[in-house]
Image 1 (cartoon, rainbow, N blue to C red):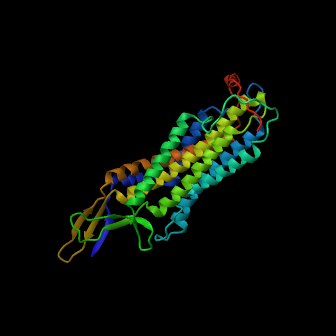
Image 2: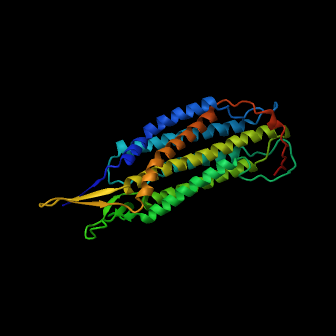
Length: 340
């Protein structure tokens, strides 16, 4: 009779210990606290005596809440899947999409705040001197980093989806690993990051990306309140843009880390033993991309901790009392805008 068991892989075992949400959260809290303690307070307060309107403070606090809720949702999903609903045959389609969905809902609320509350007509009309785009208040590094994470998530999801196989219910959640030296033996099937998980991830990632783009675009395009607050509002808008970008990037990092860990568990190596009266036969079944799977397993906990740190730092900065921005901010040329 055939029986299969995962071959012991020290690398996968160690990464499995590291890739444990409570441990990752504890490590992320320590790192985030250290960053917040030694990092200057966000410059979203007064600039040369001109205070930014209170709407920016409300947006900053809302983004902080969204970041915290995303962390809570990520840990809650792990607890629910691991300790509450323990049916191993139940496919939790939201397993990887949960952080993306929660972040998307939160950013949608922030987008509403920017559009409905934060885009009122300026108190004093101003003349437009330049066009602002969704990248105007974000750093190039933040945009490039977010783009690379999105690319990695999409490539991983699509590639794993095509490599997956359906189970008896037609859900693509298996990876079939053939026995190369014994074609007559059916392939080993292990749980995998297939289309059953990947399609919800792609849908939620697309929604999150669209909402984040909308929030950045409206944050940049809305008119300034008064000429004397332009410099202060610029600083506040940079904080809003940073919060949106961090939350979207961190949510995708958490999803990507989970996907890489499951891929590593499925494809790093499997052994098959056939029990016979005359003696046992042993076969090795290795996925052809096993090396990549092992590398993904090592990187998965790093991505998880990084995502949690980004969210915790975003939350901490959102709740911290802002300090006055540097005088240099006030010396920047004032960009005016016409009333729409």
